[in-house]
Structure formats: structure tokens, C-alpha cells
Length: 203
Image 1 (spheres, rainbow, N blue to C red):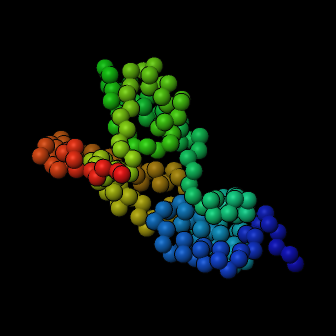
Image 2: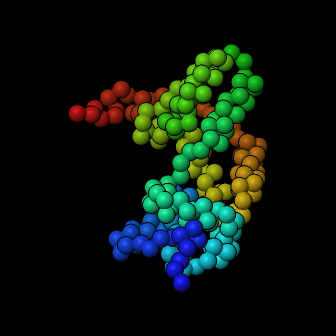
Image 3: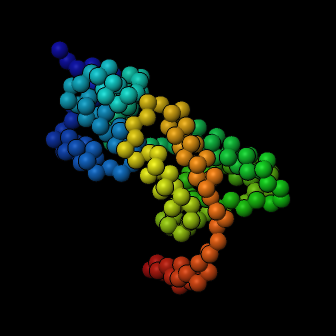
């Protein structure tokens, strides 16, 4: 019996199969790894219900991953910011605006929702200025070490059954961290990263 494309991943070439296997072994992105492993399980003939149980997710999610992979190939494995990402950015900015008076300067990276027209217009109307870190230089931002701690204590090796459980775990860690937080001091005034000649000049 022919396999139904809406239930199983299309037949892969040898090169595609090898690429998929490499992705499941080496990907550092949790979403990409999860999707690639679901695709691999489908390629091996495992059913949607079995895969859903394996990943503690819904059958609808498994079908979506398989369907989009059949349409877009390996590009479907990459997480793409959706409308909810834009709304989360705006919601966070609204919270900051309500909490602090006066002009706000918000340091952020080059995540695409940060530069959406909706965000830029809202910031201009509410006296908020976004200060973008240089591209490919997130290591300059102190918050990156904080993010690393969040990933280590709440996300690494995890397999939460749903987003609400994951958010509860992250929230619990952040509340604990805030209870034990101290004011940030010693901002490395003499650090070499503050020198204008520290970064190489592109040819």
C-alpha cells in the first residue's frame, strides 16, 4: 500500500537521508532537532500516534511537521518567527513602558520581530528607543550569560509536554534568581571590548 503523503514523509534520497541523520546528531537548536527527529521517525515508517507519544506532543503537531517538510524540505526544520513572536515583543515593551517613566532605551539584538514596522512605530509613539547590538556580536551583551543560565537550569535536556509547563519552569527559575539577585556593578570600564579598535575592520 502506498504511503499517504499527509501522514508520512515523502521518500528521501540517500543524500537527504544522510543530511537528516547529521541534523539529528549535531543540531544545537532544540526546535530544529525536534522537527528533524520527527521527520526521521516518519521516514522509518513510524505512525503519527506513535511519534506523538514518543515526543509527548499532539498528533496535530506531528502531522504539521511532516506536511510542511513535504512541501518545503529542510527549510521547514528551521524555526521561523510567527505573529506570536511579534506580539510578545510588543507586550514586553508595553510592560516596560508601564513600569518606568521618561524616555526608555532598550538594548536588543537583531531578531527580525524587533525591526518590524509595528514595533518601530509603537516605540516612536511611546518615547522608546531601540538600541541594536552589532550583528554577530551578541557576546558583548551581558544578558547572554543570564540567558545561558536559564537554558542550563530549565531547558537543556528537557522535554516539556506543552508550552505552559515550559513557561512555568522558566518563570520559577527567574523568580528564584530575582530573589537572590544583586545590583550589577563593575562594568569592566577598562575592558578591551570597549576600545574602538578591538573589533577587526572588514576589508
